[in-house]
Image 1 (cartoon, rainbow, N blue to C red):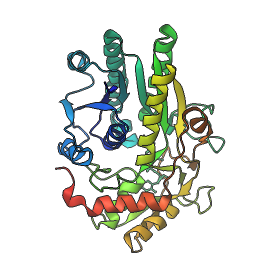
Image 2: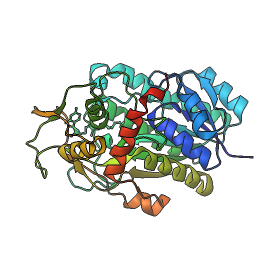
Image 3: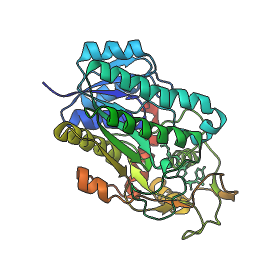
Length: 338
Ligand code: WQD
């Protein structure tokens, strides 16, 4: 009997790519999604990619009754928790929604897991818990802070997980601190599909390349970096998905938790990413330099050593491959889930 994994938020950007990777690794997946930030057509596309029907529950991770039903009906062995709000800017405007969804959602999920006797959990955390890192590359032992309500919720969730584990050693939780996920599945059938004007760099550049936005605004070119623009650790979403499979495998085999960065260890500036995307789409892309965005650190990129040691994780995709896969997804946009 295949190991059965519940993916909360499994129709979203990271969730859908992880779904494919888990199916390819022989796991049986059940998707819970409220489609607040995912297209309703994604499950059909996942069926097209994997060749098998998607076991889908449309519902909310805050709905305890829905969760109890899933654990009862599907005999879940482990959970990967993606379902959360993730816009830094939106969290500043609407912090209570972020507290309710991100913190309340995790607590409700863990209560339902405990009631069902399920203690293997992979948690989607973020490099935003490092705030403005003092030293680079950033190890997992770096000081923790937050620069937005979004970052606060990720930090609070990590603390909640630690407290639950201290109270009950049955918990085995993989905490994965994502750096900057970008790119798309090689099929071009799933990718990052923000509903409104993108907050993040790569999807914004993609819309400029597609002619949907006039130009990129570069948030500051006076940072202490190689070309003055912000530096980040961009990681291909398929590498990130592979990291989740390794995390889950480790939890099930070791029955012990871990906390690791998921990044490449290589930082690229805004202008370097723009240049790479220009190569991918075959034309120079227009941009203007504007004021810094409040709260942005100058540079942030991972020390990937612990993920290598603990999980055997090593990102493999280059920046050019990240941009090419994003452009391929944009170009097959007509097939994007409706
Ligand atoms: C990257 C760089 C900007 C947009 C955030 C969250 C993080 C994660 C990823 C969820 C920065 C610059 C951006 C634009 C620009 N999200 N930029 N013009 O801020 O590193 O991380 O998203 O997990 O938790 O904090 O990513 O893509 O927004 O910015 O110049 O239109 O691009 O200043 O240097 P960020 P980003």
